[in-house]
Length: 88
Length: 99
Length: 212
Image (cartoon, rainbow over the protein chains, first blue to last red):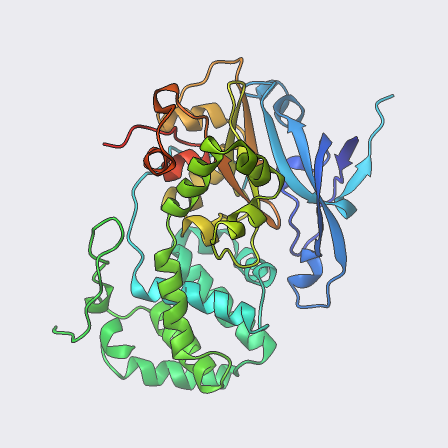
């Protein structure tokens, strides 16, 4: 399933790396639910959010500057940072 | 910092000093005591900004963050901290003497 | 200045930094203060601190090497390790605490590398504390954008047919690489094989090699 990472730059603590925001990847696996770090960081009672491993092609992340377009980078992204992506 | 320009990788390794191991242990134990968590550690580290990253060592940043977390959660007051730090400094000039 | 306490040698055989005899730094004062206040207030104990340091000192890449060696010799275990690395580690008797571990298998076609671009996440409950370079700005910045160049600085070259997979430990999972078993090591016992498996090979910046 293809997903796009939200292209948002909120202040405060988040665990979504800047270099992946706005990028499209494929869900590699779901790893379960974890305390939302955005609440946990401030010692608020955290909700349990789904965490997904997403695989991105280097060409998607770095464009023509990619060292090798077919290599990939995988990262754990919380579901609330992802939106479905349908190429049209 | 993924993707930021950076230089060659330095393979130099230092052995962890006793005070560094104690900082590491303080994080583990204050977390299991429910006083902080990995995200609150990271949040303060991030708020310290770029300059701290350049000027402070890894465990210097950690103890600074742990200390901030302990004040936030009310484990001790800033006044108690200040008094304690003065007492420690008066014990001697080296880590061995003061700890 | 004489001291009546002596630090043991590190696992690498070097003495610890003689920080005890250096001028007391502001941050060291803070460490002592935080520690003593937490003890005085009853949040933690001095014994817990020492026990935690001992636990940390006892963890080393040898733990991971035992897992990998078993995976190389026991297909059922390798399957279990890839399915649920945390449970497989616990079943082998390793106390990895609440750590969520994923094992990534290198093959003829895929080479996995681990990094944490946001901080310094590392499977410390299994392998011990991360090396300094792993926490460095250079490694954390570059591993996701030019992994091949980074790997070449560690002495590894891969042709374009091998896919490099960089794993950024962004949240709650920790990773260990199951390196590709060198043909020369086929047929060796699990204990012999464990000696081939280096720390760096389990991070993905090294390859297994015959023990010196």
